[in-house]
Length: 292
Image (cartoon, rainbow, N blue to C red; front, top):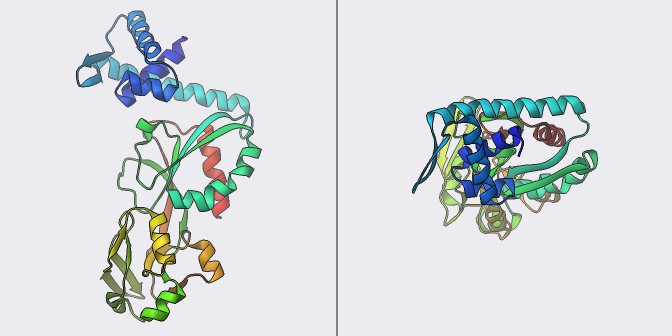
């Protein structure tokens, strides 16, 4: 194993906290990872990781080497990108994380043109409404909506969608249409627990009107919110992205359109402490162009 490959293996071991997790990420056997770290420690004549029943942890020398190794790997990758030329010759596997509904509706159907533009790139799309640990999962870029909980993330806003109150015409025919935010207290709300939850904030000019929505159905995934709404179970607060086909066809309709709700931001999030790969940057630019 060459020097750069050994450094990359060590970086994965520190980031994942174990030989087995690093081996899984690299697609090799655990003995190969153990051998690489042992050879690296022998070459440097210093202990880089401490092994215990609780796992692995870097030594002081290991932490110093880790930071410099990451920087060297990033610089080597940047040099490769520069040699190939911007937008040309990108290859390898790209791991993208995105919420299930957004990716199913707006990303995966549009992957064909991206793959055609970069024929040597393969794409793993990890669908999960939760915010995954990008380093542990080996993800190159995540597409996340809403507010980012971690201010230390390396992120760039690439789009936004208006948010609306909507339901099916059948639901409104049965329960009536709210004329003011206060009227929502008389309605069944479908609560998306990974979004705003039950706290909906309306504004009209200088007037703010916060509402705590009430409903008997609470859902942890956007697909469930869609299913509940389209089954006439209630109304919900949603980005227009989530119900784009149904809004266009009239299968759902919006109410309280003279009141404003905070827009839903879309962020491209990169692993902290790493330079974004050229593949990830190309993918984010493609998604940004799609949304534009």
